[in-house]
Length: 299
Image 1 (cartoon, rainbow, N blue to C red):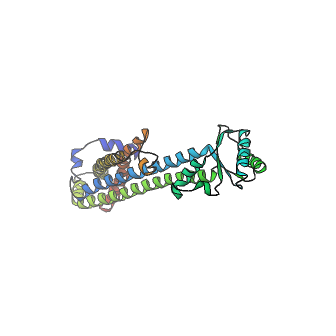
Image 2: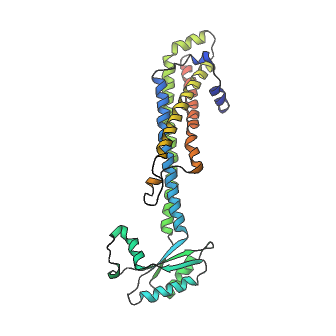
Image 3: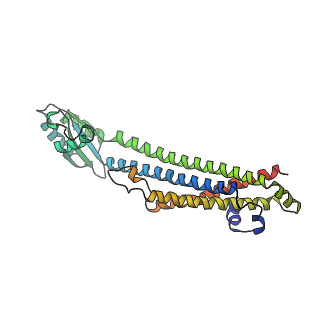
């Protein structure tokens, strides 16, 4: 069947094309369904890719950083902070480490508690940010050293943040794939119904063609070619409109995050451009199946 796709699509036979009506509800239904489904597929694809990119970006940002949280009495906080910095300075795999200032901690808490949070009067833990080098460090060994040198220090290597992000990225990509498969299945079902309706409406013409010697493969080829071209044209329009809609969305920025990062980058623009070809393959397969099954019923 795959070998028949391009020959049947490109080869034109004016006599066989007359078998299929050029207008009517089956014509616009096929084109509209292909266009609408492709339009939705473009956005499903963009949503899936944007969610995956954002999760990967967050995961990469957390991958080489860790935080040491120091909870101790006020008279011991500075001493334990110095002890933690000394431990980190002699830990293999730690590239740099620094204690966050009160102003930096205030900015971290500002989204949740507002800009007027009295950091000086609250018993907040001191945070030390560390960055690992390409070789990495031994997290378990570092925890043991911190426990011995600064009992109030707790290492957070962001594993609990990275793992959910990685899982979310995989699931969102899978959700996008499932959405595209459902869209393709819906399009195949609608085109199959349209092909059945067109064959039923032309039952008398088909019987006359058989009387004059036309084979079922000849009749089916006419329907397959016409419906495949309709689906290809409608899908191309839908893909173009979808890509225009994606292109006019705001570009990605830090403040907008996910909503402004919805789009394609670089070679990613080739993916929605390939959707019309996939729609044509779906239409070809669905129409071929519908044509031969319906022709058997008309015998």
